Structures are given as C-alpha cells and as structure tokens.
Amino acid sequence: MTAVEDRGPDPAASILPAQDGRDLGLVFTVAVLSFLACIAVIAALAADRAAQGWARQLSDSATIQVRPLGGETGPEAAARAAEAVAGVKGVAEARAMDRKSAEALLEPWLGKGNIPADLPLPQLVTVDLTPDHPASVADLNRALAAAHVSAAVDDHSRWMADVRTSGNVVRLSAAIACLLIATAAGSVVAFATRQGLAARRDVVEVLHLCGAEDQFVARLFQMRFAALATRASAYGALAAAAVGAILRLTGGTDGFSPALPIAWTDLLACLAAPALGAVVAALSARSVAMAILREQV
Image (cartoon, rainbow, N blue to C red):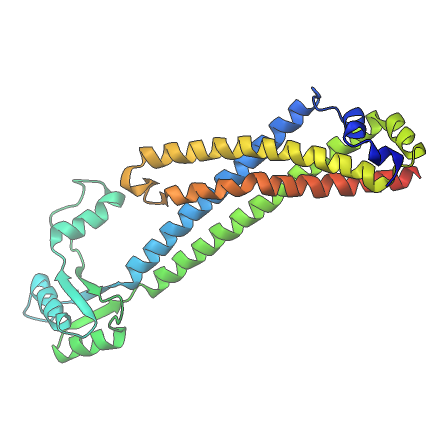
C-alpha cells in the first residue's frame, strides 16, 4: 500500500471535500431523473395490471349477435339464443341484452338521449364463460345450430390480441424510458467527474507524485458520486412514491382510474432507485476518471 493510501480518508477529503456547492445542481438533476424513472415504472405496472384485467374479462366472456328469423321478433330470437347456449358446458350464464342495455353501449358515442326510439339495434346475447374450462366458439355454434338460431359468435380473441399488444408496448416503452433516463444520469455524472478532475488537477498530480495509482484516485470519485447519486435518487424516489400514494388515495378502489389502477405494491418499485442510481453513478464516474487519468500519463 502506498504512503498516500496509508493516510486513510484524508486524501479523499483533500481532493473531494464533503461539501461542495457545485453539487447542488447535480443532486437536483439526478433527483429529477430518479423521479421520472420511478413514475414511469409505477405507470407501467399499473397499465400492465389494467391490460391483464381487461384480457381476463375478455377471455371469460363472449358475445352473440342474433339475426331474427321470419316470424319472430329480435327479443324473441335473442331469448332463444340465450336459452340454447345456457346449457352448454363451460357457460356460466347467458343473458339476452335488452334495448336499454344496448342503448347504454352507444351513449358514449352518440350521447345520452340522442338515440331515436325507432333506431334498429343489434340483438345481442352476453355469455359469461367459466374461467377454468370455457366453452369454445364451436361449442356455442353447435348449440345455436341445434336450436335453429341464426347468429354470429364473437369470442373477443381479436380484442384480446390488441390488449396484449398494448400491454407489451407499455412494458417496452417503460423499459426504454428507464434506459434513457439511466443513460442521462450516467452522462451527468460523467460530466461532473470530468469537471471535478479538471478543477483538482494539481492535487491529482501531487497524489501521483506521492505514489497514488490511478485506481486509487478513480475510486475517490467513484465513491463520492455513488454516495451523491444514492442520496439524490432517494429524494426522487420519495417524491415519486408520494405522487403515487396521492393518486392511489384519490382513485378509490380503482387506484386513480380503471385505465391506470395503481396499487400500493407498485410503490415498492421506488425502493430500487437509490441502489440503481449508485451503480450507474459509480460505473460512470470510475470509467470517466480512469479514461482521463490514463490520458494524463
């Protein structure tokens, strides 16, 4: 061990003082980046939960559009269709949708009270399937054919594919956002390391003359910025957790909204921010410090 290293923490204190007003900007920047990363992860977890819930609802149901035959009304045909599929194995319940329920489906697009009374609406039957062993489209079609009901069965498979695709896009977008944020944090730390070495170049040269190796000097910057990033990331994570908690409390049972059902467990993702921030800062500071020190040799 060199003479400089035997002096313990004194070299670190001389080259990198514990308090530096120039660190405030770095702390703020890393804290903001940590906040954005945590918010992105919380939103991704909530959106993924919503997508999975929608996929489960779609997979546990089916819709039958009934075409009335000659001599019968639409409600009568829908009632026959519901009765035909109600006894199929894998069907929990089948209900003929009345006109009021059908109008409620159109209100978000046409507005409440804007649907004419004589507007023809499709005759629909909603089918709840058993989660463990749901009935297939072929089973439902056979039951309808046996009852001489003209109908088309929709098992929502197309919608489920869209929901799963959306969930994958959300997860990928969150991962890319976190990667970009980590890269930005590393770049900020790298810039701060470069500036720190430039500001204390004379001290670094003296340490080299006293026998200190590049690894020792680089380790000083690594430890300093890792500690700083840990503190700054904790600030950002705490702020993100507070925002997530507010959204969870104001959202009631849905956790902000059905489209973004934030759960209390989602906030636990913020716990990883300080450790990840320390790792990114340590790697960035050490790599930049070693590159600069080698250039000075």
